Image (cartoon, rainbow, N blue to C red; front, top):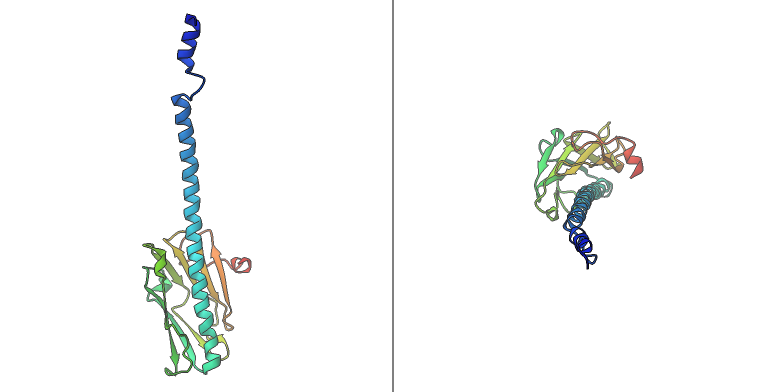
Length: 196
């Protein structure tokens, strides 16, 4: 091997490996892609958790909406104190309670008199807001409100916000979302309830 070949090998390294620069660039690219993937995964996880909570609340409210027809009572759902201004709830906290008039109605308005934030959300807090402090279901499968009622839920004050809407008078339940806001004091757009 002559001096020129030896010098070329020193400058370019051996043909069987990668240079330190090439390795550093590769690690940087992988780090950037991992950061994007993890961020998207967390956003999807938050969305799924908020959707699950909205579905559970809608199911609980649906069960209560049918009870007055069976027991002839009026069922009143009262949401957590301060919910109309937006509140933060920890795992296991009571989001809503139900009472019946008369109090001894059989069957009861719900086997579960309280709706709690599920504990499986880990250490995360739930943001909640509502357009009314309570809703009253009557024996005619209706609600006494003349305006739609929305209960808005988000995980960690992050978008999207999931909404459970009870339509005025009839009390029909729909689930929607607000991708533009992380505030639980902002209603979900009407069009979002048609796409869910």
